[in-house]
Amino acid sequence: MAYLAGKLVLAVTAGAPNNGRGEATTGRVKKAQIRQQTYPYVSAQAFRRWLRDSMTDAGMETSPTQRVGKKEGKAQKATTAADPVRYADDDLFGYLKATAKADDAATTLRDTPFMMGTLLAVEPARPTEDFGVMSRGIDEPVLHAHEFYTADLAAPFLLDLPRIGTFTLPQQRGSGRANYLTAEAAMQAAAAVSLGAQVIVFRGQDAVRLPIEIRRDRAALVLEALAAISGGAKKSMHYGDRTPAMLMLVPMAGGVNPLEFTIGGAEDGSGLQVRADALRAELRAWHDQWQAPVRVGWRPGFKEITRKQFEADLAQEIRDGQVRIDHPRTLLRDLAAELRAGEHDAWFDDPAR
Image 1 (cartoon, one colour):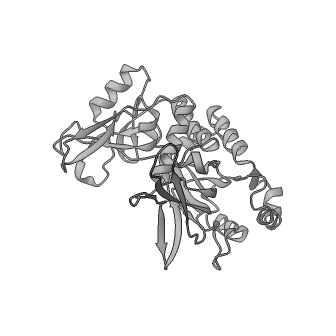
Image 2: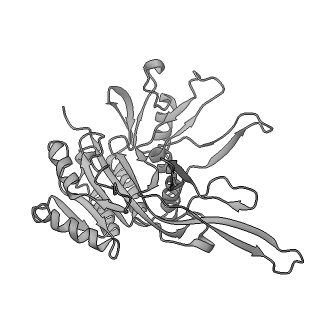
């Protein structure tokens, strides 16, 4: 196996976790219009920010950021240190740090081993506009408003384990596979911090790879942060727990996510559905590409009727150990501990073809 494919659900109750562009004195939440219906969402960028911040809270040293570019309408951008050897977040979340000339040897690019979809409501949900007044100690009250909503949001995610701690070197820039460190930067950084990086061939390209201990630790950091993730806007007025109410996770040999249609909205708009028949059919179709068990995290009290039906429909698979159901926090932390202990080191290499 080489990928951890997953799908997660956040339960938002009277919340505004991700703001869109406001209008005058009215704060708006992010929402999409699909077939004349409104679907609130949390962007992948926002969720990845929550995840990074949660990893920082756990003690991870983050890559420093720098704003560059001119003001007054000129091109502006912000970059991190672009050092994935030293900083786990540069490794896991990717970056682009380009010099003035696109073909300059100092340009470095890193795509993301952790891929995240948009957390979209599983059914239409019209945000409520809350009206407020600030009148304390002033003669003329200030009026303001903001939106909030209640919805279950779902999104797929994928963790490319072999790419963690593996950095391809530049060769044939026009090959369409732009994802590289400069050779000098990669080797100097690895030598400077005494990490013992090795030069290997990775997916047809020369690459620098960090030791397995560091790669295990970085993969475990992602899972542990998911287990305790926090964040979001409007916490003073609309505080809510942002840890997953539910998730599924399955190790895959390729970068396919078979869980996309297992968790989602009902066709009749009646809310979240968890489809045991869809999961069984996907596992059968990909029978030689996944490794048991499918890990299902389900928080007590969340969609209890749906959970009982799901467990009844998959009773045989649960007895056979093909599907395991636990609390999301327990599931994620246990798998992180297994990774740190080296129990899944084979996942950090692409399967032999």
